[in-house]
Image (cartoon, rainbow, N blue to C red; front, side, top):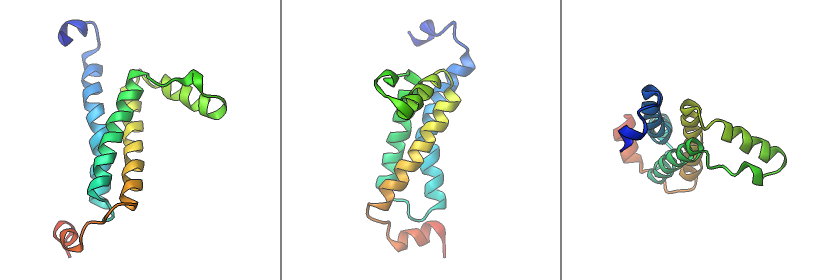
Length: 122
């Protein structure tokens, strides 16, 4: 069914929609976890969910921009305008994933030092 309904679409763009969703969910938490010893399991999980969710909402164009006023309305309208660009949706999703992971990691139980030494060495 998917192949039939998407036969008139740009296949490269269609593939990027799938890849972009996974990049938004995985790339931010993965890189933050590699470079920051303060990353936690809960932070990574929340970052994964937020990144994938933001990508999905942006790509689907499900932002009620008309219900916001002022600067928030302008931002919502701009975000809604990015729905046709999977690259922008993936980048924004990754940014939100990083922020979510950072915030949750700051307020959840830290990983024990023994595990950090095994992963990072020294």
